[in-house]
Length: 185
Image 1 (spheres, helix red, strand yellow):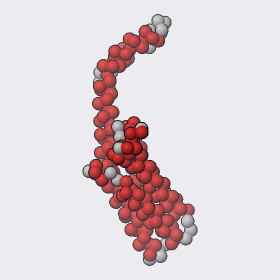
Image 2: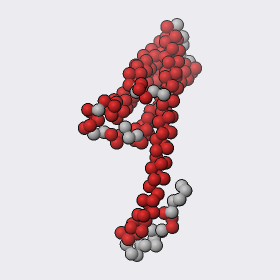
Image 3: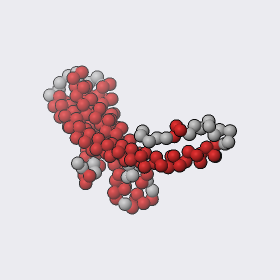
Image 4: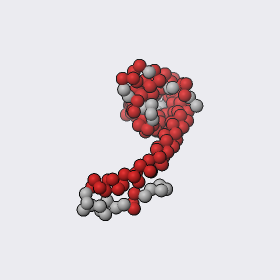
């Protein structure tokens, strides 16, 4: 980080005089560097916000493709092969990545964890971003993961395809219900 001068004051240089004096020697340096730290966090928040927004297209496409392929194979009674497992991963992996990006964004965003209060329940926008959207998406990810796990462990091909298309469809519906459409890029 450019301009970071903390290393010029060593904690050991003021150790005999006490930590309080050392703290007051370092405090002016920290306060002058605070705008750089805040700018870095703001840039990181903006980057994760864009990543989370555009990754949602991959999630929707992966889920739709996985559902269509599983439903087609279910109706035509095809055997469940390794190719079908990989097609199911096409919906699972982007969903899990999106959940991780969303979790990071939840802690960085001013609309996420930091906005949880009594006011969040009365304000519909705060409630959507801090409570409804995250918990609905967690439920969707859990359903999609359960569908994949049951299909992977199953022995009957018809049931394996049914688990994929049914659980993935439920997850997709939950995702579509709680996407903040007003902020959709």
